[in-house]
Amino acid sequence: MQVIKLTDLDVSGQRVFIRADLNVPQDEAGNITEDTRIKASLPSIRHCLGKGAAVMVTSHLGRPTEGAVGPEDTLAPVAVRLSQLLQKPVRLLQNWVEEGVQVQPGEVVLLENCRCNVGEKKNDEGLARKMAALCDIYVNDAFGTAHRAEATTYGIARFAPVACAGILMGAEIDALSRALHDPARPLVAIVGGAKVSSKLTILKSLAEKVDQLIVGGGIANTFLLASGKRIGESLAEPDLVKEAHAIMDLMRERGADVPLPVDVVVADEVSALARANKISVDAVGAHDRILDIGPKSAAHLAQLIAHAGTIVWNGPVGVFEHDQFAGGTKMLASAIAHSEAFSIAGGGDTLAAIAKFSIADDVNYISTGGGAFLEFLEGRTLPAIAALEARYGEN
Image (tube, rainbow, N blue to C red; front, top):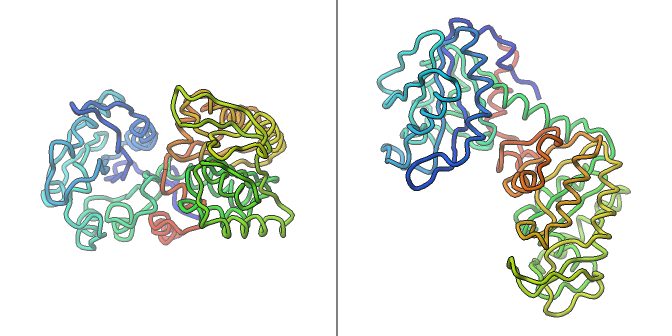
């Protein structure tokens, strides 16, 4: 996967257009409640400013209606936070597509919510060409939107004089490629979540690559059904038992494995007050709900992780939000943190688990992309990365 990288280019005195992912959560008053994505965008911006480039940055925010910028759509709070972090003024420009952008070398401006531009989501060629004309160098640093072919993620990359991957995007591409295309073995994947149906394509794709496929949550319950176990009233998808069987068969044919729980944590409801019981997987009653893996299962999986060469993690193995059902995910998180393997993690629930168990510094790479991370795991071509690949070798 070859792309031009920002750090390979001389940006001195150049007009640089950075597509960042600044889609941060806000409260009802418009105050930013979590700024990780803004901080993740800083290395590329600082690199360009340090080289004396004239820097333009844009991003989407929320789900605006094209053609209008409502109070909840504006990047104004982002401009304020960006200014604080960069310790320099950041002007917010409206109507920048039609009116153009005036920015000086060493200056950075923020261009209003790109999804408010008519034609952005449909990747309108006319819009893409107008944006491309604003810059000398286009930088895509928004991995979280790489699975979308929009005007600021795909179209502009076709028409800008130079198109490259930003520092964050480049790191994502390197880390994901290392984990899936050239992994140190054994390659262990952990896929948790409520439904097999939402991750069936990922499971099938990983089953062709990994040495151990650890499944958790409702997904594991469906696999337990497929192996002939009773799961009581646990969340599962009985109509996908055949698909679960096929995945286990594929793994066995390759000499690989889908290790299933031998003990589980059950309760009669999902709540902070629910009483948790640790039982053998063969003792699950008709009204039990499996809400976590048991200590024996967790210890076994921790051993697999300890001997891994590469770990890919997407999804918890239990309802970790409640402490009595967090043991399995906590033990796996600890095993990943102490493993010498190259580890990469992504997905909202996974990031929440990493934060809860304070292991962020012990995971080699934490992906900023939700849907893009999943589609990369599925083996899909991400349009925004494909657009950058198509420009490789031109400069």
